[in-house]
Amino acid sequence: MLTQRQLFLQHNAQTTLAPLLLEFNKARGMYLYDTEGRKYMDLIAGIGVSNVGHCHPAVVSAVQQQAENYMHIMVYGEFVQSPQVNFAKALADVLPITLNCTYFVNSGTEAVEGAMKLAKRYTNRSEIISCKNSYHGSTQGALSLMGNEEFKQAYRPLLPGIKFIQYNDLADLDLITTRTAAVFIETIQGEAGIRIADQAYYEALRTKCTATGTLLVLDEIQCGFGRTGKLFGFEHFHIVPDILLLAKGIGGGMPIGAFISSKEIMASLAENPILGHITTFGGHPVSCAAGLATLETILAENMVAEVSEKGLYFKKLLQHPAIKEVRGIGLMMAIEFENFEVNKKIIDGCIEDGLISDWFLHCSNAMRIAPPLIITYEEIEEACNIILENVTKATA
Ligand code: PMP
Image (cartoon, rainbow, N blue to C red; front, side, top):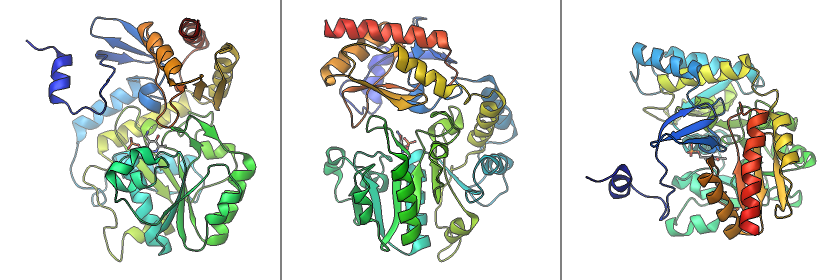
């Protein structure tokens, strides 16, 4: 009989020639458990998803309850579905007043797609600006925004009219003009290996967008929902986007994405033509119930309060001559090493020692740290000990 691993390789589409091939059958809080009962500390939270920890009881219970009431009943936007209403209202309550209208979709990528269409429709312009080394998703629209030719070349032609600027480069903001529909930018760049722009840059970007009538779209799919030490990344920099993109962590482990704007901007999707964006499963009631439970849990358990301090504790402990830099904000960090080979050895060694991490799409010499926000100080010490031992081993 074939093993699950063999069947996986045989019948499930592969995205790499070297998948990790770990096989888990349980996840709780900070930990994943493999089929042999071995426990692994999860330092990446399914790539920035399980902010409240795996299978948080409040999220599980909300999922169970909503699944019993109803699952899919209608495509998005026709029926009044209380999980969608309640989650949208809860988001409006924690966001600035101009971000009071949410369109729920299935994923981060679909949020990007929806926002691109919304910006074009609202501004009646077609040019979109994105950043070098950005990641916004993998469908053809979102891929067109990706600031790394290596992943795009094989899939051309992609969308025309996309221009690229260097993140955190003030001079490049001159490319934003009255022809630009929107600037898409990760508030904190994730796949570039965790890059944070300067306060002056965010301010200049906001000013330039306002002056040219360009919509500022902040992608907080990776950095949102508490990961940076504030509920939303833009709160650190005292700017407000015209459109905010969320996904990953907002569903507490269930699939959901959202693009959020003002009622006025969002209204343009409802006419000329109607149905400006259509999705069958977008805002799935079970995902929205999970999302609301996730947000309520983050707020009730005050989960964001210690995120900055926990991030600093990682930085304090991660001292080693072979570590070139530990950069990041809150629990969204990158440990940079000499090169990919060293990084890979360290990551593989950590996994062997029961600690899950990985690298970044556009920064292969850095290791990702993005654990559930519930990680304790003792667990941070344990994680750093494993990392440091493996840094020593890999570079001895
Ligand atoms: N934007 C950013 C910043 C992301 O990190 C990701 C996912 N890594 C996406 C968009 C795409 O989200 P999804 O995989 O849910 O489609």
